[in-house]
Structures are given as C-alpha cells and as structure tokens.
Image (cartoon, rainbow, N blue to C red; front, side):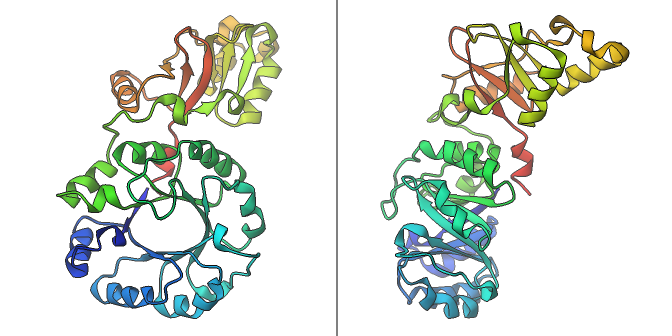
Amino acid sequence: MKISASIYSAKETDLGNLLRELDAYSSDYFHVDCNDDISVFEDIKKINKLSSTPIDLHLITPEPEKYFDLIRESGVASVTIQFESLPRKIEIPKDLNCDCGLAIVTETDISVFDEYAEEVDHILFMATTPGVSGQSFQKENFRKIRAFRSKYPEKRIHVDGGINADLSFILRNMGVYLVVVGSYLLRQEFIGSAMLKLRSDAEGSAFKVEDFMLGIDEIPVLKASEFEMMKMLKTVEDFRMGFVNITDKEGKLIGIISNADIRRALIQKLNEANSISLDEILNSSPATIKRSNSVSEMMRYIKKLSFPVLFLPVVDENGFLCGTLKFNNLIRGEL
C-alpha cells in the first residue's frame, strides 16, 4: 500500500527539510490539498525542484476547469476532485497527463461515482470531516470501501483521514492502494519510526474485528440441513471466495468447506461426487476469531497458528457466525 504524506500537516516545518526527511524514509507521494487556492501551484513548483517524489493533488473547488492548465503544467502524478464541491457534472479532460480520481465524504453514497467511472482511475474516501485535523476514522467507511471494491474491482481505492498504524494494517488487508497520512506521520518526533509502523503489522487495539469484517450478508453461508454437493459448489462459485461457511439451522457455525477440502474429497470419490456427504468434506474445527477481538489480538492469534490463513470465520461469544475476515488483499494491496 502506498503512503502519501500530507505536507500541509506540518506547515511550521521548513519545506526543504520536511521533503528531505520524507524522501529519506521513502514516502511514496506528497499529498497537497488545494482548497480553491491557485497559490498552491507555487508550492508544487518548489516541491518539484526539491524532490522527484510524485505529487498527489486534492482539488476542492466548484470550478475545477480553471485549474486544468495548471495541472498539465505542474506535472502532478495524481489529481482527485472533491465531488461535494461540484455544482454540476463536469467533464474531465483526457489530456491532463495524470491519474484522476473522485473524492467523497462519509455521508456521500458510492453511487455518485457511477457517472465518472469512465473518466477516473480511483476514488478517495474522506473518512473524517474535511478540514478538521486529528479526528478518528469514521467506521462506516469500512463497508463503503468493501462495496466499492466489489462494484469496481479494477479501480484503485485511496483513503484520507484518521490514518495510523492500526488502521493502516486494516486498510492494506482490504486492498486499499494508497492512504493519505497527516498528523500521525508529520507530528511525530521521529518520522522514520511512524513510517515504519504504517508499513508493519498493527500494534494498537482501537478497532475490533467486527468493525471491518465482511458482514453475514457479504459471505457464502449454507445451512447443514440444506447441504447438497451441487448446491455447495454453486455457493462457492457464486461468492468467488474459495470457501463456504456451514451453520446449523439457528446460524451457529459448525465448520467450513474450502477449495482444498473439495479437492481432497473429489480425489477420493471422483466417480461418486454426488454421493459425497457433508461429514466427508466438512472441516469441523476451523480457526475462528471472535468479533470482539481487537486487531492486535487477532494478529497474535494468527501468528500462533501452524498454517497460513487466507480467511477467518468471525463468531460471537456463543459461536454464532457473524462474518469473515479475508487476508488475500494484504498481498494484492502492495502491488
């Protein structure tokens, strides 16, 4: 996952010194907010003279068109236009020569992206109230990120607001491409230490598993009483997650069936596939995690397992299925 350092979060620091330190610790982008202020492009000129790190520009204005020539001239790598500032649908030129995106605040539904989907490359989720520093990440954005990724798997996801080491791990796991980091990174005594924490495993416990898990309505579930080989295979195929959760009639988790379980069963009974019973294919003691566990508790648990995990069923204190955690995006999100 890429890190874009929000340079205006450290206005009291000399720009040259700040950029040199960020470059020393390999910031992937410099994030520049332009709140309808043309003078920002003078700062961009200075940044380009001092560093070759690409610039990530966030444009907040009712008239983006008046900045298009400046964007072309400045050589910014990425520009994101704030949706809520627009009085109407705008046309984004194809010759801006940079990655283009649309930013939305927490209250805005992802459906507004639809009319821009052919013109832009990414979405930016503003996960705190814009212009108010130091706020916490608004948790409803977890579900919005998942919904957007499902609807537009080819589009990149950027997130700005409340980013810290704990949240950075979660967002990497969700396949987020870039995070904008301000206070956490630039108001620390040692930028290098903060950067390292952003790129490593979670430490804190501000978020619980239930905050960012895939909900029960987003995952494959099949009741044991309804098990048929073909129905089970179709459920796995429809959700394309490589597994299905098996519950009793009340919804308590009794096991999972993964692609590996299916493969082993078919090797043994390929010519009698339709006769394979639930007991022959079910993993009745899978690794699970409680919805109330913190991120750091989850990490300690995973590290103790003797096998790699791509997903974990999430249960409540009574063993009822609540959701699932997936981990394949930890790799995909780094690309």
